[in-house]
Length: 302
Image 1 (cartoon, rainbow, N blue to C red):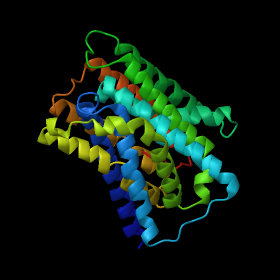
Image 2: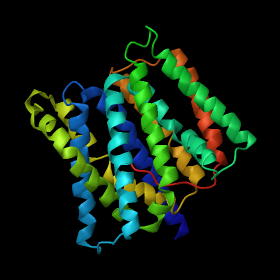
Image 3: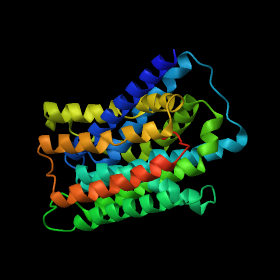
Image 4: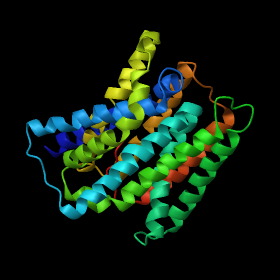
């Protein structure tokens, strides 16, 4: 039975990371060209909010303590709005390869915030990993200004690192809150609150999006990133975190940039440059050292 659960958890992690890896080239394909970033954020939040209501068909709604409601709204603003807006506008203006690599630095940012909050102490391994990871990430951002990296953008890369910072803040500040309630309850509050807030700002852009101008591939990519990557993978991820160790989870996260890079190059969206490979390896080594040192993990939302 234990072996069956472990196998299911590992398959779920592979499934989640493959789906999230597809996000980067697909977003790069459509954002700013066929659909605006704010329209994509709004539409994806509305779809996720609808999905988050489905579990109410078989489970009773869980009541939040009054003191936790404002905290959940804060989590929604961070993960549903700030993170997704930074990510969408970042990917609309930079390389999907850069975006997928930079996004792996979230564990480094979690470590920085945890140390600043007095929740964790630096070890030699974590210090070296943090240094390597940040050097690799900064190098990628600096290299994006060179003429060789014509599809990269320093501003876009900075927005993606800000998005990763928001994810890290959510993991550190709302860790205990998330653990108090069912994940379906937390996701329902986050997505429904975010969708309600974003609709007045993104409704016009959604209404003026010309679906008729989209080819079959573009339409498929748009529907994919709207429907697939948000709600179900997050449920599967949190299921997996109850079965496998955090180190296993962190290993599977490396699937994302590998698949994203392969798809981006295969689709002709980007080129993989030698310096990017070097900086990526430095970043991955740093993140891997930090992740291997951590004994605890926090569920995240995409």
